Image (cartoon, rainbow, N blue to C red; front, side, top):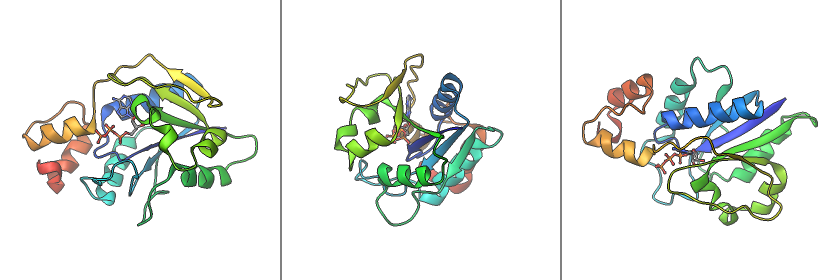
Length: 189
Ligand code: ATP
């Protein structure tokens, strides 16, 4: 059994997140992708835009009908969301023969050496690093990295928030997520 962690603020979740997870799962024979929604991400000091519960609900909506995807509440709560804690908790629930992978975009992986206990993170998981336009990365010595270079998706939550605030209906949002955003008046939509 192969499980993958895919962490993010998902503020909001968008089609590139889904494509990345789908391609990684197909390409590397992953049985389950956990979409772990960060409550208090250390690398986004200005915090998040939508509350945790709304971001989680949008991930739930986006994962509906996707048999390999599962939303996860492992990082909910007031504590800072450190990936090493999430990895240790997921690992504790797996069998000794089970593989644990970590799906990550090139932008986030480029900062890996600033993560809390990053050497432990390197030891604990194999990475699937996904190309992202405008971002390069180097692989730290000892890291186990599979490159997923077939994607180049120019989509970001930052850009979607801006466009939502300007009254657009971005095609890069899954329809149920867009409806939820309108319903809750998130991001100035
Ligand atoms: P923001 O614009 O708010 O920083 P984001 O679009 O980068 O958000 P996150 O929730 O921070 O979305 O991303 C979660 C994970 O998905 C990260 O590992 C990120 O690198 C990856 N990711 C997001 N968008 C893409 C993309 N277009 N291509 C490849 N990876 C992506």
